[in-house]
Length: 145
Image (cartoon, rainbow, N blue to C red; front, side):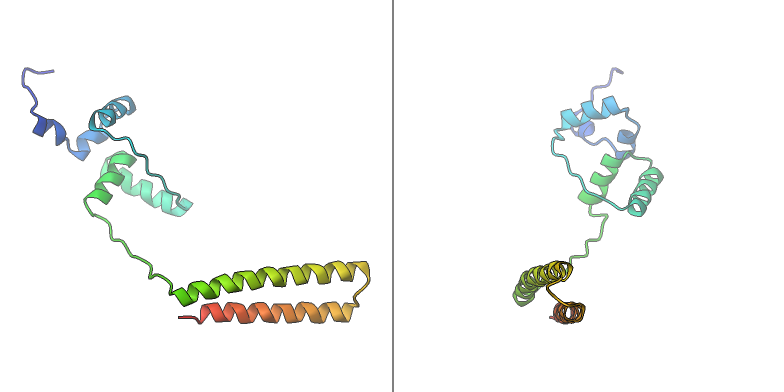
């Protein structure tokens, strides 16, 4: 190291580009000194991952410093999804419960048809009615709010 002493202010202000040139071992040492202890992870589709890596490569940074820089300096635009209403939440809950019952009825109709206790015509009508119920429930959820 040269004869110049680094002050606390200059040592803490390493640029993102300087961090990108560190080896993995140097990065780990730097992270330990700075106190980076919390890991954040998320999943991406292959296409999104490829786009992310392209942006990382274009920045000349490593993925972690790039992500920290983007998020912590607000270089991102967050689009919040609107919260569903309580009524929609309740409707979805009820449709999920009813769907479970429809599935049980379809299973029972299939078992009885295979056992020969229900005719093919009855079996077909039951499945048709169950499909109609499911279509109505999907439409109700889609058209809610």
